[in-house]
Structure formats: C-alpha cells, structure tokens
Length: 330
Ligand code: CO
Ligand code: ZN
Image (cartoon, rainbow, N blue to C red; front, side, top):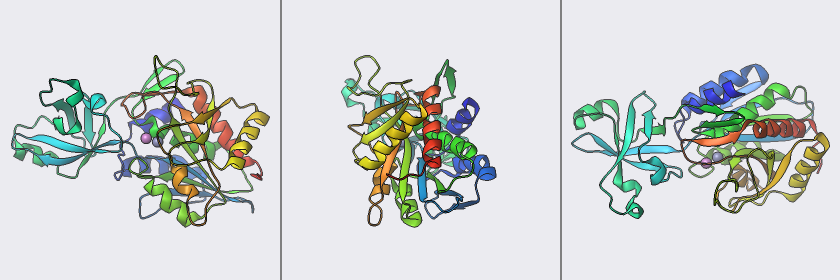
C-alpha cells in the first residue's frame, strides 16, 4: 500500500491535466478489469463484469489542486490563478512543478499585514532571467502541481494529493481483492472534482448506475484547537452522513454501517460542514441515484503535506470490498 500510495501521490495531475496519473492508474488496474475506456472529460472508466447483479459505480477523483499560469511578466515571473481551493498562506515558499518537468518556487510581493496575503500577491519564480527565457519553458494556461515527496511516519503517511489519490489506492486495491461478484463494478477514476465535481457528473450520466459510492478524504477534528468534528485519524473508515454537496441516501448509509458492523470493520460517522464530494453530482444524475460516501480521515487537506493513517486506508478497502460482495439490498 505504501508503494502504491507513493507512486500515486507523486504522479502529476491537477484538474484538467490528469493524463500522467491516469496512465499510471490504467497500468495498475488493467489486469483486474474487463473493459477500460476514457471519456470526453478524461475519466478513466473501468468495468469489472458481474454475473447479473446491480450496476455499481465506485468513484475516486484522480485530479489534484494546483495552479495555472495567467501572465508572464517582463522579468520572467509567472502570475497564476488557483485550480481548486488553494490557500495563499500554504502556498508561500512551496515548490511547484509543471507537466514538462519545469520547477518553480512561490514567492510573494512585499506584504506588511499577513491578512493581505492573497493569491494576487504571489508569483512563481522558475529561475528565468526574463520573459523570453520563462516563455521557452512555460506558457500561459499551463498548470502546475505542488512538489513534495511522500514520507511515512509510522502508520501515518504524508504526501501531496492524498486528496484524492488515497481513494484511488483504495479503489485499485478493491479491484485487486474483490474477486467474482454478482454486480457490475464500474470503477471511475474521475477528473475535475476540485473544480466542481465535473468528471463524476458525466460519468454517472453515462453509466446510470443503481448505486453510486464515492471515496474521498474528509477533515478531522483531532489536531490542536481544530474545527469541532467527530472524525479522528486512526479511528477507521468514515461513513458520510452529509457534506455541502449531498445528504447521503439514508438507506444506503445505514446499509454501510450494517456491513461494517457485520464484518468487524472499524468505522466512524462523518458530518462534514464545508466541502463536497463527487457523490453530490452522482446522486443528482438523471432521475436520482442512491449515493453514499466512504471517507478517509485526512489532516491538512489541500496542503502539500496531507496526512492519512494507513490503518484507516485499509479499513476503507475492506468496507468497499464488503459492499461489492454484498447483495446491496437496502
Ligand atoms: Co479536495
Ligand atoms: Zn477530494
């Protein structure tokens, strides 16, 4: 799992530029699925055929937050806009990299009051001496991701893009372990979640599943003076009740709880007050689809140093496998 997580989190893939991470995932899942296709939004849709059960959509988004170049000035500094929710305080001093391998560091204009630190005050310095030199490496419209190697701290794993590559790992591992099932399992590695749940929306429309389950990270309330939230790192898979994008279908949510209890899987209930997931888009597809979410507790979400507990990741795999193998009658 550590090796897979390292590969996945170190892969490049800001929203709209998921090519490198998609190719990596394709290689991982190819031996375990019957069909693979990529749709117009770049979603990687993998089908593992069942024996006449339901159509189950399992979703993990493969895009990550990042930035996009909006302007290159005469001295070769790059101004940028954000891709997804990127906090300027977290960005300052970070290294970023482009798909072509160009590196840069994020610097700031002079700011006297920290409150004035806005994305507009920041720039990327790629070491270019002027606009010509910069333009030879990077163009307006190019995206960049944070650069940060993964590290393991005991059972805790720290990396960029654990949102949502930790879930991609859960989904890959599920496909490896699940074996023969009654249900058709559609594993969707979705694009553009961070800019508005866009990939999942069209994938769900095309598949029209009987059940949709997204796997994503969620926040925790277990760090010093953190938000008040009943989710902790290391306390097991989180079963979502609600976030800003959906109220999980109650019967499916209860079924997930029942399944966790039956299989002895450690779980906790999750109410996320700010933030959405692909299930929000899946649930509202066509005439409505029963939708739920399995969440991986994660600290420091949307920073280059997100942290998950490997035991939680394992519990999420067990729960996902158990659901796929169950009758899904709820
Ligand atoms: Co996110
Ligand atoms: Zn996410």
